[in-house]
Image (tube, rainbow, N blue to C red):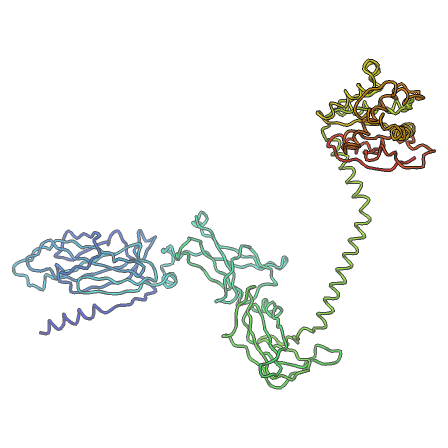
Length: 628
């Protein structure tokens, strides 16, 4: 009876969930102790099996012990695993037998299973039944096992739950040198007083030089502050505060990336405490309570959480604005549970003084623990100061705009000259193709003749096909003025190009006289417009002109008149004026003759580039008046 009670009590005790929180795990060589069994058992092996619960156990399991350990290979590369021991009692006449062990991890959907197989060595006839008790031992290593995970092991009617220690617990023990997760980078700080910087020096071991993982670092204020990525190898000395901490780790892309944490400036408070005090600021705003009373709300910001007192005060109305008299005994002590971290890495503490006297020039004073003097006064922003600031900003803006206008005025000449030079350069590069007919004035003399021939040669050098009446005397004599002109104007429609009419005083006078005669003889005008050649009429119209090329000029005037009637004045003919010769007769009091109005006019040589542009791209030329 006592034996049954002992066995029942033992089963109850072994079935209780056992939570193991060991900071120092035993290290066991996995290769040599993977599976072992006691005397009386042989051929002990283990293999995977289905994780389905077994209804009937082929052996009697008397005990189940589960212990977290570190499975190592040659005392290195240790991994978390479980040391499982089963106390069994084979049944009578059993030889080959087995027992299945299932285990579950919360992150797995289905349980995993291991099957012990063994052979029972028959006992001698004189041995007692109790001597048949034996045990099996297994080191269970699996990728499903990780630090800080909870594992439940089942063996027949027994089960046990264990909790693997966390990485921090394991790495704080002697296991730090053999567990991969415990390998974290370390660093030191060095103050450079000349450069006024704090250098961050990462200590690398020899085996870490060729590490495939990226070293990462982040910076935080206070141990529970947000850690922001930090890529620099130094810090400005004025930004270092006692609560500044660093985290370093090898970025392995999973939970194995254990971090080293260090706050190296906590013990050197004398050097960095001043940086903390100088970065304490308070913003103050006047307001009104729901009850109608006045209040003074404030927000204190600092790089670290500080122990301090805040109180309202009334600023001196005299010249000494730094003097501020404390109002009553209503100081507020800052507590650690209200601080809130803001975006730029500082901490913020809000507060309010209620039912303050309205109409007073109230501010806020601060006394930080450890600092002998007080900070402040911190006062609300005066709206009049804001108005003055905005007025000054508008005044400065107007001054800048005026200065910019003056600069543009003086630079206008230079910009215009630069634009003209660029324009000339672009014109020189323009490809010019087409046909040009150059017609001399009726009073052609030697000087005008030279200019006409020079212009024709220059246009031909630009790549244009040029016909000049002065160069076509033989052809003019054989064809006659009007047929020759028509033959030269025909290619203009197919090849593109223009007819250039040289404008001189005689040409001006000829156009005026020709227009008056055209108005007086309507029928003759219609005949010329229809292209009827009446030699007698032409001879009468051209009578009194000494130039042998006057007939061509008169034929050109008739073509220009036809263009006017058809609404395409300036499509084929251009006027060119040599600036060395006056174009307007002294006796003429009117402007450009009606026949020439609407034709593009170019003064040479000053407008030579514009003429080339007109011939190259067909843009409209200037419609200028004439200089004498």
